[in-house]
Length: 375
Ligand SMILES: [Zn+2]
Image (cartoon, rainbow, N blue to C red; front, top):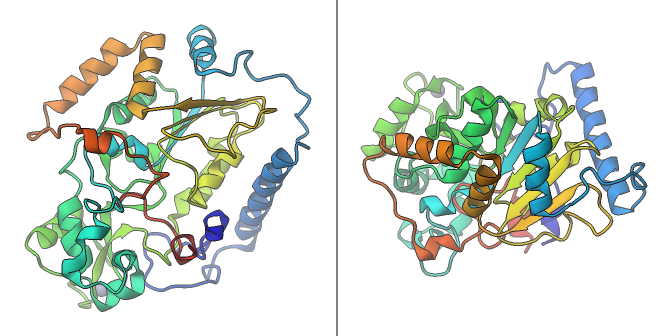
């Protein structure tokens, strides 16, 4: 899987929410200074990562960011000292307890149940070129997975609580399930790195269509065609071969400035460029990873600021809430918001033990052909 550590071919070549054409060139009209600063930022992050790996980081001799780099040590530090600026980064693992089906679990995974669409390869369902030729399979799948069929998890509500307490700087998500929005996190506090079903654009002329318009098409089994040019209209989720949203590149530099806590949940940090965000955290920023499996590259034995919690994301947020005295508040929020959902999804033993180190789910669409196909 050498491709896993490579940025996708899209790189910085995002064309915003309008992505009618594939391109490996910088967007026309982007000022040189902005482009140059993006390149410099990328170089800075790469060098920081390299120095960390080589144990040459300038802060290597500094003391630990907090005295006890265990999860309990982190909790007691938070309780007694607090954090002021928190960034969260999440992947599929925070949504498995919502009951969203896995993508590649043999037998029950969605990829194994796509035979009826006669796809040349299951991942073609998220290939832009294939989609343009034959959008039907994608829209059939979109109907099954449409946001609203699932309800947020305690993790989503914990993140909302962080925001309500004015602690959250930004939430970066790889998921396309929109559970953050459903949990009530404001759009401006989020970077949906792999896009969203919330907005839609014509692939030909770029005209935008509403979520309601798209939903009506999807649920009436009608291929959504542009009112203006008859081109195919596609939800703004990022397909293989497409660029990431501009926000993904524009916001980290400011968001991570003076950030004192980065919480990474439900991701094994294998999909780039999303995973490279952890490199933006300054040396005195505590980084906490909460995931069902450990990650070799995170928290080296000599590190001064990384904490691992190997386990269930929901369990971890309940521990945090308890330590901070927020349990009742979190319970009340879940209860209040839960009443908005008619059909609560029950957590099953099947989906409880999934994590994204194993098969990726529908909500974590890798960004490049390289990532998925060089195996
Ligand atoms: Zn159009």
